[in-house]
Each structure stands twice: as structure tokens, then as C-alpha cells.
Length: 152
Image 1 (cartoon, rainbow, N blue to C red):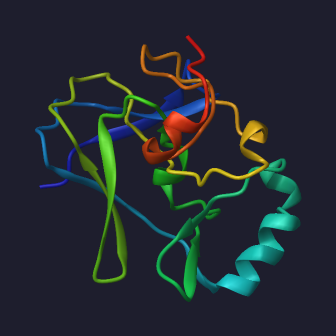
Image 2 (cartoon, rainbow, N blue to C red):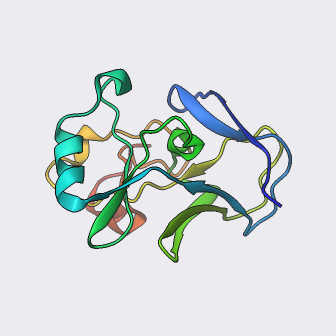
């Protein structure tokens, strides 16, 4: 059974996704859905986001050839915020992107996962607002954390 979630105001970043009921560890919560696009098309969309998205880009890597453009009204998963101390993770299974709980999640708790950005010269353009005790100050995959000093 799919857990009940809702989109509402977040203290992390504008909008977030919250548990309406407790969610057990290792539970499939929601699929990240949208339009399947080629890497080339994804690059074009990232460079020229839709006006109504106000500069936000919801591209998610599916595999080596395709990404999912989650900037569609029916994709509630696009509102799940990044955290350096997440309660969810991403699992790609049979060309589906699933958000799965890493631990038990309490009712009203915000769902988060580490966006896993690569470390490059632009990493400072992606500040992290999670405020967790593990926060590195930037949205980066954990494997890159030793490359920057701690924000705390």
C-alpha cells in the first residue's frame, strides 16, 4: 500500500512533501515521474527552464541515455527537498525512479533525500538549506563531502 503524503510549505525550501501517516523503513513512497527525454534535450531544458517554473529545473537522471523531466503537474515527488541527513533514498528499478524510506518516518515529518550532485567548479551555485547537523552547506553527493570544509 502506498503511504499517504501531502505537499505543503517547507522550512527547508519553499515547498516540501510530508508524511500524512507514519511510513516504515524501506517503504516505496512515490515514483518520480514525468517526460522521458534524451540527455541532449535535458541539457536544452536545463539551460532554458519554463517561465512558469521560475527557473526551477526538475530533471532526474534515469540512465546513461535518458532523463526524466519531472516538471509536470502530476509529479508530487519533484517537491521532495534535499537534505544532508535524509530520511529517504532514490532507487532506480526497471526504468522507474522510486523514493524509498531509509528509516521510519513519523507523521508530519518532511521527506528528504540527498540529491547527489557531482563535485565540480559550480558546486557553490547549489547551496544547501537543510540545516541538519550533518549539513555541508552545499548540495553534494556524500562521496564528495571530504572535498569541502563543513558549513557547521
